[in-house]
Image (cartoon, rainbow, N blue to C red; front, top):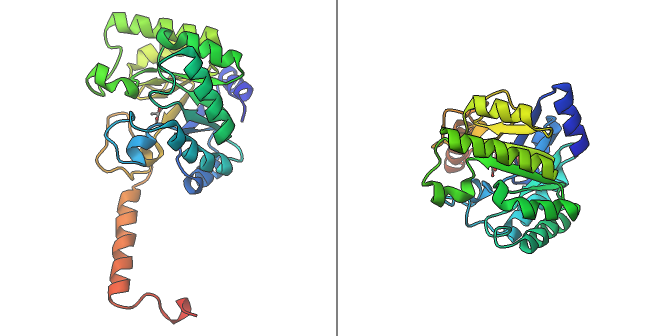
Length: 262
Ligand code: KIV
């Protein structure tokens, strides 16, 4: 997969499927199933590390996780999230962090959150040869500013700013933009207004593609069921049942049996 192919998919009206991934084993399966893009999201901070927010994860931790996903990806384009604190301070910091992530992890592209306020950094990163994916709407790195994870851009002023930001990111050369948790009609408008592919999460079905957190869509994350999430499997039950059976087999000495012994 390439950024040029993704643009072609938008032009052809072919939907783009993206999922997060944080390790070699699951990324191999998802890639083999034919996913177009793998996102090593900073949601790893929640899903992998058990933090309440995405804020604590570091560049080094993102690189460590991304290396495994890159080794797994035979087909998909791999995008690594730039974590909080790795690009906000200055354009120079943003370019340095992006180049470090690209060089050390082997990913194909980076994603960062924000619109006009991060535009100079995005321009510098793209000039330096780094493919950039934008992220607008609910941007979890700003949770403390927003005061929660609610729907964004409900009001006209915020919706107008989001549309303006999306056009700026598109003109700056972002190869794609994620829209998170915004009204479906606004996402549809943005998708039509920009030339790059728009990937939605909680943004209706008029975007050029969709992304979900892998553990959420597999039903591994039991406590989390926002309206936009569909469980395509119920793996939490599978894991708990299998673990229960394993524990019983060990306790009653039926595992390992003769065939499973040397
Ligand atoms: O970190 C992440 O998983 C993301 C997706 C929700 C788009 O940014």
